[in-house]
Length: 264
Length: 251
Image (cartoon, rainbow over all chains, first blue to last red; front, top):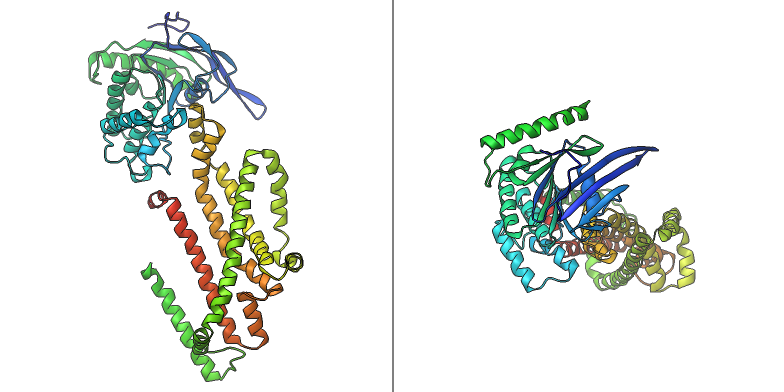
C-alpha cells in the first residue's frame, strides 16, 4: 500500500496530477477536487472508490473534457493534453440510449460521428450484441427492454466508440445485485479481449475488488487520494476468498473515516 | 376506441332525441331552432354546396397551417441557435399574442383581399404561436447528458442538433401541431366572416341572413368533422414519424 505522491511508472496510459476544481455557488466557492493525482497503465483496470458525493463524477467530467479544471495536468500516453475530449469513452449509470433509435442504431452512434458505419463495424456490432445476449433485439426500441438489457446495449455502444480509455461512472449502480454481478463478469470478459485502459468510479467496495487491478480511495469532499491498493488476486475472484476479505477490510477501514466525515 | 365511444354516443343520441321531441312539442319555428331531422334533410339536399365550401375552408387551413409550421419551426431553430435572435424575437412573439386575431381580421382582409390569402394569413397567425413555443421548448429540453455524450465524441453542433436535439424536440413539435391544428379553424372562419365569397364561414353567414338555420347547423357539422379529421391526421403522422413513442407511453 502506498500513499499519494508515489512516483509514476514510466509509461502510463492516463495520468492525472494535482487536478483541482471548485464550483462557485451563491458567491462562495465550493472546492470539489482539491488535489487528485493518479495514473493508469496501458490496459490496466483501475477503480476509484469514494464516499457518495465526494466529487467522483466531477473528476470524470474534468477528464472527459466536459468541465474545465482549475489546475492540474492530464496526460495521455505520456503527453500532456487539454483534456480527454475525443480520446475517452464515457459510460454512466443512466444508459442514455436514445429512445428514438433501435438498439442497433444506438450502438452505431460512435461510428456514425467518427466516420461512418461500414461493414466491419456492423459485423463487430452484431458480434458484440450476441456476446452480451442481445441478439434478436437489434430492432427493438430501448423502451421495450429491461434496465439490464439497456445497460448491456449501452456497454456495447461504449465499446464501439473505439477508444482505448474507458471512463465508467458507476455504470451498474442502478441495477439490482444479481444483474450487476452478471454485468461485472461481462465487462471483465470483454475487457480481457479488448484490453482498454479502464477507469471505474464506484462506491461499491466489492465491485472494485472483483474488477480492478488497482484501487484508489478518495477522501470526502474536497477530494484527494487517500490511498491506493493493488489487487493481486487472480481472476475470477470470489468474494469469500480469504485474501479478498482481507483487502475488503483494509478498504473499508480506509473509507470509514471518510464516510464519517460526510455525515459529520 | 369503439368501447370508449359508447357512453358519449348514447348521451349524444339522447340529446338529439330530446331536441327533436322538444322542437315538435313546443312547435319552435325552424328559423329559430330546426329539428335534427330537418338538419339531416339539409345535409343531404345541400351536400354538394356544403362540400364545396368545406374544401375552400380546408384549403385555407392547410395552407395557413403549413405556412405557420415552416416559419414557426425555422424561427425556433434560429432562436435556439442564436440567443440574440431569441432575445429579439421571443418577447415580440409573446407580446403579439395579446392582440386578438379577430381585432386585426378587417385589416388583413383590407391588405390581402377577399380571397384565399387573407384567410391563410389569419389561420397562420393563430397556429404560429403554439408551434414556436413548443418547438423552442423541445430543442432546449434535450437531456444534457445525452448532449454531453456527443460532445465527448467530438460531435459538431450540427450533429448534436440533428442527432439529439431534433429527435427529442419532435414530441414537443407535434404537441404544438396538435394545438395549432385545433385552433386553425378559428382563424379561417373568422377570416371568412370578415370578408369572403366562399368557405364554411361565409356559408354560415349567408344562411343566417336568409334564416336558413338548418344550413348553419349543417355547416357546423361539416366544420366539426373537418376539425376532428385534421386533428387525427396529425396524430397519425405523429405515430408514423415517432414509432418508438408508443413503447415509451406504455411504461
